[in-house]
Amino acid sequence: MRKITFTNRFLITFSFLFIFSFLISSCQKEELTENKELAPNSDFSLIINGNCESDCIVEDGPYFENIDQTIVSWGGPNNNNFSKTVDIKYFNTETHFILQVKSTKGWSDLVINGVSSWTGGNVAPNVWETYSYPLDEGWQACDLESFTLQVTGNGPQANFNVSYSLIGLCGGCETSFIGEPISCDETREAVYTFTSEEDLGYIKIQGGLTNFTGQDAIITVLGGNLTASQSTPGGSSNRIIKVEGSATACEPVTIHVTWNSSNSGGIITGNWSVKNSNGDEVAPSVAGLECN
Image (cartoon, rainbow, N blue to C red; front, side):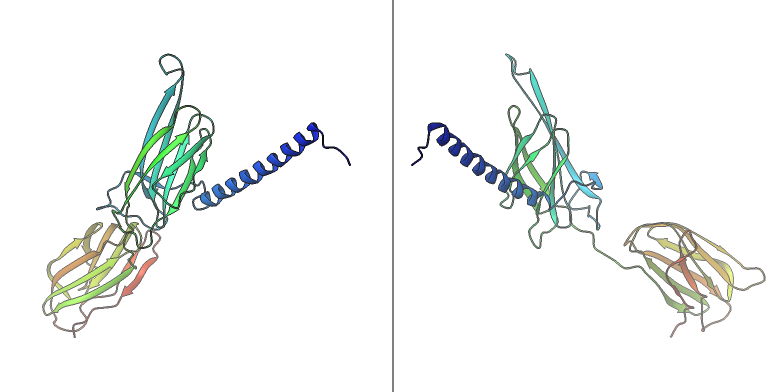
């Protein structure tokens, strides 16, 4: 029988430990990768600071971030031979809480306490690393996310106390354009309301008033950043109303018009439309209004 020498025994033991360490390391890396897949390093559209009571986020951002920084020094009689700066950003998206970390010194370990789904991670030098965890189902605006964060390695650890009030989602809306006749007597009145599902840098709302007489129409515009004007087509008894400017997503634009007419009853307006800077209609036009 062949004897196992001390050298052979050492090599066997060393090989076993190496394989075991490799397997453990692989498992840890897989765990970290799974965690980071929730929020891969990417460019988020961010706004510094936000108020959970007055701000909201639309689909795909921008999001409202908080920022913090800690500088740690160590070494020598005055503890200032070495130093590192650790920066963090944190914010919430529609579904996740996002944490971004950057350290100026070497590879560091990152530990978070107070979040059960967090698995930890590591931070490369001078690179923003992104981590995340899913928000609770049914989360609400101003819900508080709080935890402690330690960035260790290369000197003393940098400590952060994170407390963030979640920014809620903006209420959605659909683009619409409607008109309502209020009065069809000789003193006439109509209201048009336009709502856009997105911000519009330029719109033109335009339409006619039939059988127009007397002084200029009284036009009141609420919402958006718009200016009203009116004109008379040559030789016509009609009046053209034009409202131009910008509109904010989900903010109704209301146009209230009163005017005098020589005829009572019947159709009191012409066709009204909303067009963008390219002359394309952004909502279906409204046909002439008529009182029931």
